[in-house]
Length: 311
Image 1: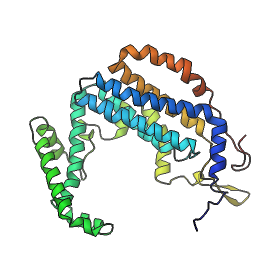
Image 2 (image 1 turned 90 degrees about the horizontal axis):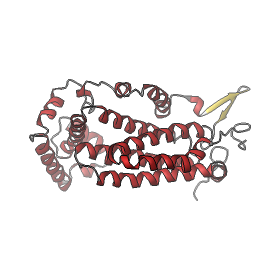
Image 3 (image 1 turned 45 degrees about the horizontal axis):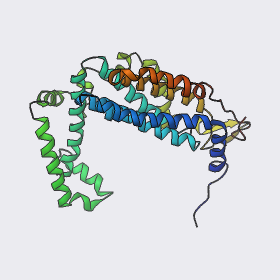
Image 4 (image 1 turned 120 degrees about the vertical axis):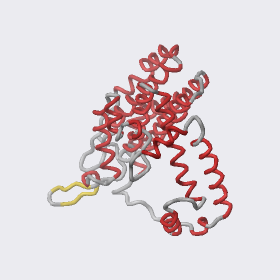
C-alpha cells in the first residue's frame, strides 16, 4: 500500500488551493510570459542571420530563460516556493550571458562557447570509446550503475563516431586556433568557456556587465539551498522546541516574483531590441496593459503560527 504524506510537513491540496486563491492573477501572468517567450524564439530566429551568435542568443540562452520560467511557474503553482529559487539562478546566468555576448566581441565569445561545448561532449565520447585518460576511474564509477553498458560494443562504436565528428570540427580551420588555446590553458580541470577569455569566474562576467549586485543576491541564497548551508530553511527553534518547516508554503513568493519577472522582461527586451526593434512599442504596451498590474500588486504571504493558515 502506498504511503500517504505526513500532512504537517506536506499538505499538497491545501497549499495548491492557497496558491490558486492568492496568486491566480500571477499564475496567469507567468503562463502568459512563458507563452510570449515561446513565440519570441521562432520570430527572432526567423529574421536573424542564423550565425553562431544568433544560434547562441536565441536558441540557447533565450530558450533557457523561457524553459526555466516555465519550470518556475510549475513549482510556484504547486507551492514549491523553496525549490523555485533554483531556476532563478539558471535564468540569471543565461540573462548575464546574453549581456556579456552582446557587449563586445560577440563572434569571438560565441566561438569560445561552442568550442567549450564540443570539448565537454568530447570528454564523454572519449570515455564511451575507451580512449579517455581517466578510463579506469570512469569504468569503476559506471560499473556501480550499469556494468553492461561499459562493454556494449554498439555504445562504444557510437562514441568513436561522435569523437571523430567532434575532432573534425575542433581541428578544422574555423576552430583549430581556439581549441589550441583551450589545450594550452593551465588548469587541473577542463576550463569554463569564459576562462580562456581572461574571466576567471562567472562573478567577473557579472561585474563586467554591471550585474554584480544581482549576483550577490541570487548566488548567496541559491548556493545555500544547493549546498544545504542554512538550517533555518528547514527548522526553527521556539521555546526550546525544534519546529520543522513545511516543505511547501507561500512565504517569499513575492520576492521571487519580483526578481524573476524583472530578469525575464529585461532579457526579452534585449533580444527584441536586437532582432525585432519594430516590436518594442508593442512589447512595452503589453507590459503596461497586461503585465504591470498583476506584477506590481503581488501579495505578501505570512502565516499564523508556523505555516498554519495564510493571512
